Amino acid sequence: MNTTLPKRTFNQEWHVIGFSIFLLMVVLLMISAHATGAGQDFSWDQFFDLWIKMSKPDWSYLSSVTKPLIETIQMALVGTFLGGVAAIPAALLSAENIVKNKFVRGLVRLLMNLIRSLPEMLLAALFVAVVGIGALSGVLALAVFSFGMVFKLLYEAIETIDAGPIEALRAAGANSIQIICFAVVPQVFNQYLSFFLYTLEINVRASTVLGYLGAGGIGLYLNTTLEMFRYDRTAVVILAILLVVVLVDFVSNQLREVLK
Image 1 (cartoon, rainbow, N blue to C red):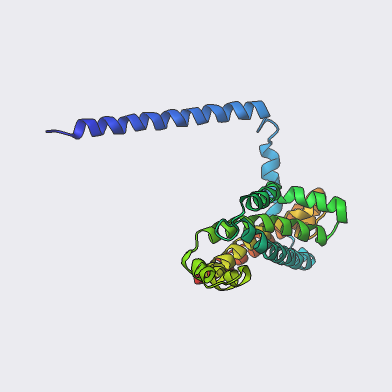
Image 2 (image 1 turned 180 degrees about the horizontal axis):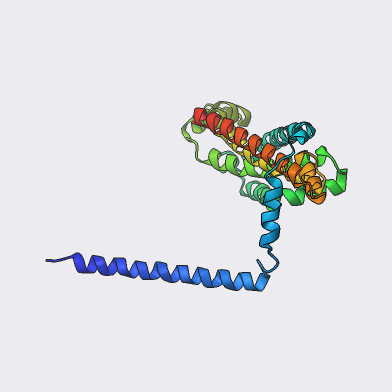
């Protein structure tokens, strides 16, 4: 009995479905581009002129961006640390295998989800309005952002741990603190460090542009050089940011590989 025909027909149907979805996406993209006016004000002359000017970096400006670049890294480190540490008790309160009260878990998760819905740029704008221009605004924005991200990853990791040690300690009369210290922490510690490093990677990238809003760091210099049309200095700032991001990503990836 020949089964080639049905298989070929089945594959042809999926090809038709896939091609139809592709055409639908193209049509939606064209409609969206027309509705938003995307690309109408784009100038190829300005585009190439910008790249020509940036192709000759002013390397003498490098000494001016070294300090704000270090400040950017410090902002990311402090913000990630504050948010990562604060996320630990919130994650424990949200884990079903730690807290049995549904109302408490639901309330904490609701509050955390509200915090996670705020992007770091909006947070930076809010903190600049509250505490003023400077690195403190960036640190606070990154701390809140890190808090929401680490919380989400950590509480999901806690809910997937082996329940055996927890039940054994409960049967032995251990209190909640002892259960967390001896049954939960050993199982999620490496994962937590991995989450911390991953969040740090994201924060290093995010902190480079927070200066646009007055939150300190290298982003302020990037904004200044663009406003002054000093694209030769803009190139230096971008290359410095690229170097730092690549180095942080490399070190973080290596450390996370060790933690697996």
